[in-house]
Image: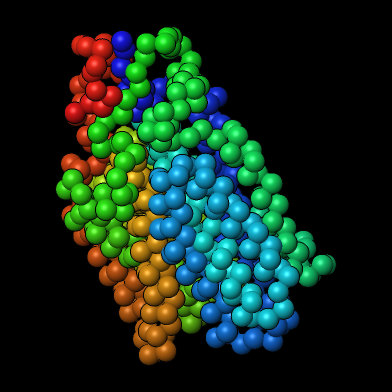
Length: 457
């Protein structure tokens, strides 16, 4: 009898067409996820005019999706671990497609907000399941880079929303860009058919045929006979209560630190996305300059995400993330003091806020064992939404106090320092990726007896 550790098999695999297929599926889902998140802000001026709402009401209408994302990240992340990644991803696509489209048929702010809340459940639920999926199946040597490539789908989705918005809204009304968001629901049967399931999930449910099919695609040259027994480490077994396991086996304190890191990073990110243009306009910069700032911010974010992913494959991902938070604090302070060249500083801010948040997703996905990976990312993302909600409100309060530009940016920078401390306190020795490195067992081992257990110690 041969025993095969499926996770080591995936870790040590060579990139092939199977991996490309998983990446493409996850990337496409994140693109549509990003589209649905961005479309509300793009159509907002037309919605406000059509529904005759003021800025306060409009802010509530937009924030309803954020509240939905909070619950969706935690709830659907748990579903993906409990009932399978394909189910979690399909439910996410169902929610964000159907209810974003439904928002296009509303005519009052309350119904619109309810639809956006329900759509937010799917928007928030997609990233935990996709993060767990791409982390599990990517070869270890390129895992960070592949993860950040996938999450750049958010930027692509935002660009798609802007392009369609410019093309459709003036000609056919704001409703069209929402109704168009319903098309991804057609992907669900294909996700259920072609997306591979989580390996621990397949082992738990004794789906040997599917498991052998997936293993054969991961390592096409591996000869499989009827005597093979597939196994995962004890910590990766899909058993027990996933939420409770976030605090077991020495992970409790680190879980809390992840949550603080997410809160602080999303605070910075949403504070800047809401107030960057306004703050720079208050400092005397023109609208044209403000648009250049946005371009520099988003360009820097993409470079930062991909660069951070590349570095995390070469170095310790924890300390790469720590440096990202420190860079955010320094660059935000420099921005407040008008350090030149200003566009470059704004680009660094984008790289060290949005880029750092993407890297945080990657580290969280690598930290937790596969059986609770979606739950770990989902709860961190969901709890982090408190920061996303507090950021625009907090900076709005500071603006109302007529503080200087330097003081506003230094407050945001101070939040970044808190995030850096939280990351530094994470116990990296409890990371699933670190424990995998410690093992000396081969991918394929000969069982010492026919009754050998199906997990390794």
